[in-house]
Image 1: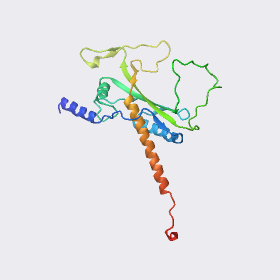
Image 2: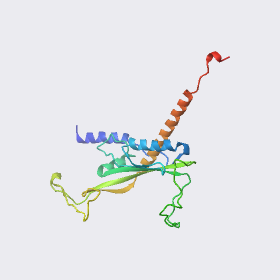
Image 3: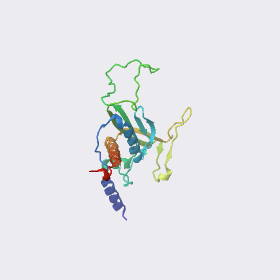
Image 4: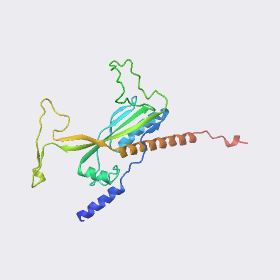
Amino acid sequence: MHFRAILLLASCAVWSGCAGGKGPEVLSVPADRYELAFDSAIEVARSHGMRPAFMDRRAGIIETEPVIAGSLLEPWYGDNADFNQVIRNTVARNRYRARFEFTRAGFKPRTAGEEIPPVDILGVTNEDWDLTEGDGELNLRAWVFEERGHSVGQRRNTWTFIGTSYTYKVPVEGNWDENQVFFWTPTTRDRPAERRLLAEVSERIDEQEASENDVSLGATPQQDPALQP
């Protein structure tokens, strides 16, 4: 098959498989459904290939490992919002990582203009932040960060890719956490993906609640027909 035909089929597949960006900016969660919402967020992240790397139920924080973004050469990957994002992930090597954060409803972070209180090193005056024992409504927010990979010191050969070489920067003390040639740099946030993740968490919560209601209705004891008038 001609290369242009293959490219056209891949483009159509990617275009039809784009996920869009519909969903809430903030998801409201009742306190009695917090455990279910926390577990649902973990399952949603795993379903998108982002394995949880850090989980704290009391603080309400979930952070995931990165996952490589799909490109035009991978039409089966449907986590791109639109065709523009597909092209961006094709011309550059991008990856995504997610962060879910539960906070009490009405909680607002300190602004830059507010006075910063003294640092409480021993934690004597800080209020305990345990969402598993609190009551009241909670808010769930999601952040999806895009990171772009780039090579440092790349020297391309003018005739063949095989002749490409790299210059190495040797650290003065110890070793770097990242590869000495390939680095990842945060670039932006994928806001459509954030809304999609929250929408999927909401769907999982609704499905679980519907399943629990069906079980409770099925467990209702039936009256003996012989005792009925």
